[in-house]
Structures are given as structure tokens and as C-alpha cells.
Image 1 (tube, one colour):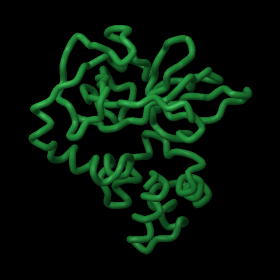
Image 2 (cartoon, helix red, strand yellow):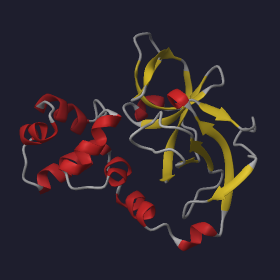
Image 3 (cartoon, one colour):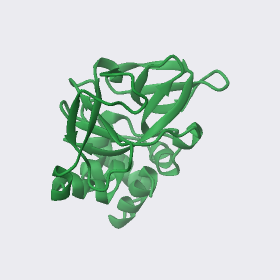
Image 4 (cartoon, one colour):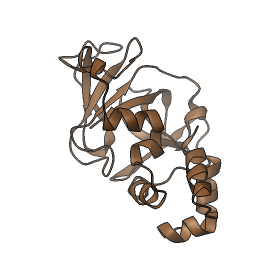
Length: 206
């Protein structure tokens, strides 16, 4: 289930129209419609307001029920395994790599998520550039690189840029053919970037 589908499902559980939800969060009905159809992503600063209005955890709203359960009560098995920490997320959401290994050998090991896929690595949020979520010190885990970039429009993903930079951003179409604009709450948009691949976020640990 996508973010838009979760918004629609929780709204219907409350027997609210799109217009009622818009009033509750100080938005517009057309904006709610765009979110539910997957044509746009709620701004980061709106996610907490939206989650509260829908009576759902912000992690569950963003990533699904299992992610919320793992956030609230990490499985004991996760403490047994470790994976490499390969970078930090600093101001503006850029990843500052610890090493340049393809998947990252890392200079530090961190607890692995439950049922982590082979090749899973983590980066750590350093500061409040992604406020209100994820928070300072959170670990963001990912395992795959996907070339079908347009399938991840309007989602929060790890973006692997052609010049070697990496960033955690919401991916939107650029104004130039084959280019993308990368956005986050507390930094200017990165316009018309050449994105080679994206990594969906598997799990976030506070």
C-alpha cells in the first residue's frame, strides 16, 4: 500500500471526505486528492499534522504498519546482527560517505533491522535538516538500487546522483528531459539533477 492509499484508507475509516480532511489540517481538497492519487507528497512539516489528524503514527503513515511496529518494539533478533554504517546525513540531506565501497564496508557496525536483506547498509541523520522526521541520530536503512526512477516519484528515497553525490530527498520531475528535482523541508530544492538510481528506504530506527 502506498502513502496515498494509506491516507485515503485512514480518511475513510473516520468517514471524512477529502474536504473535511483538508479543513482539519489547514489544506485544500485538491491537495488531498493529489496526495491520495500519488501525484504529490505531503511536505515534511505537514506529515506530523496529517498523522495526528488521521490518528496514525507518522512512521506507519509514511512506511506502513510493519515499520511502525518495528519502530515501537524492535524485534530482539535485530540486536544479534549488525550491518555497516556507511555515511552521515548532514545539512540539506546530503550523505557524507564514510567510505567509497559500492555498498560500503563502513567504519562502524550498527544493529540490523529484522529480516534485513543481503547488502543492507545504514546512514545516520546528523542534525535537524530532515526535521520533523527522521530525527537527529536516526538510522536509515536501505539495500537495493533501482533504475526505474519514475516509479519512485514523490517518495522519500536515497538518490544516487551521476556525479557521485547521494541525498535523501523527495523525488519530483525536473523541468529538463530526464532530470529530477529533489526536495526536503529545510533545504532549497536541488533542481534538474541527473539521478542514476534510487534506493527505497527499508526501515528507519530512531
